[in-house]
Length: 239
Image 1 (tube, one colour):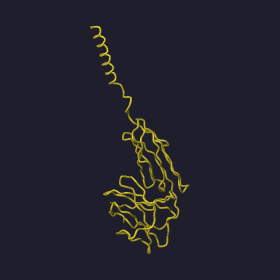
Image 2 (cartoon, one colour):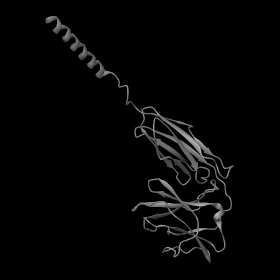
Image 3 (cartoon, one colour):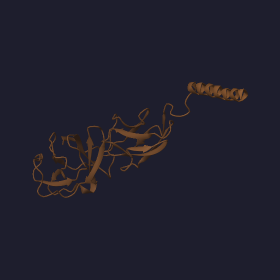
Image 4 (cartoon, one colour):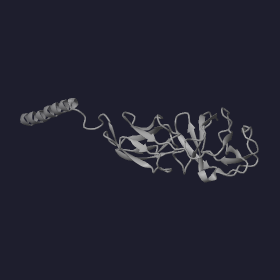
């Protein structure tokens, strides 16, 4: 009996020593997270009217955390998806509009504990821009969040539809979403509308993406077929 108790006590002491040793040992999981990106930068030249989309692979070292992506310069660049599970995820980056020299934009990837920034360069070209003006919403106006159409004035008889202009809304937090391409206007037209600086206008309309109440936005038109074209408008408004 004494021998049995001695053996049991020995096992208990050994277990205690192991537990103490384990308490001071580094953890094998949950360590600091780091992100690596490939490629480390993205460039869209101005030699093509429709620069192809490019991909970025993001790998995180800490396990399988959710990787989020946020664009700086959403009027020029779009990234999708907005988030993806780790430890490795692929994101697609495309040019929305030409930025011109000296305009900084990029994509920042984050897991909450680590970030990695990828600079993005977008070229610039200047095809003929049709004469257009945003009539609704008026710059600085407050409109209902369920507004169904944004209105653009063009000189009577002009048809810029071949450009494939698409409405894009950029929220105050930098998030962006696309609406529809320009098409026929609703009847009746919404009110109030800005009076264009040219006489005898015709009107085109685009449907916005879903909007949130109490938010500041900027509206732009970009030419889906001419992505090195700079944004035609960047009109601020509120809901």
